[in-house]
Length: 130
Image (cartoon, rainbow, N blue to C red; front, top):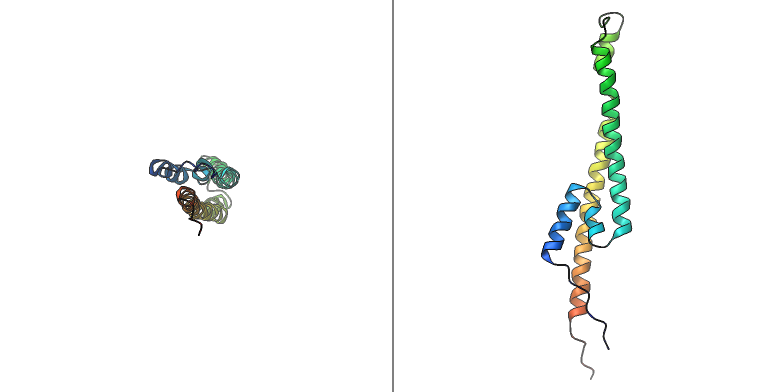
């Protein structure tokens, strides 16, 4: 007796997975059943995103305090004003987030193909014995 075929992922569910994955990388994989991998990728992406937001908020607050100080033109405060943001960190974290997003898209494509391959083999009739 052959096992019942797995429920086939519909075009609508793979479309939803693609939209979820575009919003937050890894969530589409979680939606398609690759839960551990989806959680890992989503956590890495959200950590990069949170770090970028935190750096921006912290350094923007420093920028505002420097810009609104009474003695902006004293000493080297005006020169420090231009080099206040940690640009290298922001670019590095943004690049890491972009790379995580690309990897997530490739893994989602593989998960869709694997699901289609499993469903095709499960739904095909058994081979006739000679």
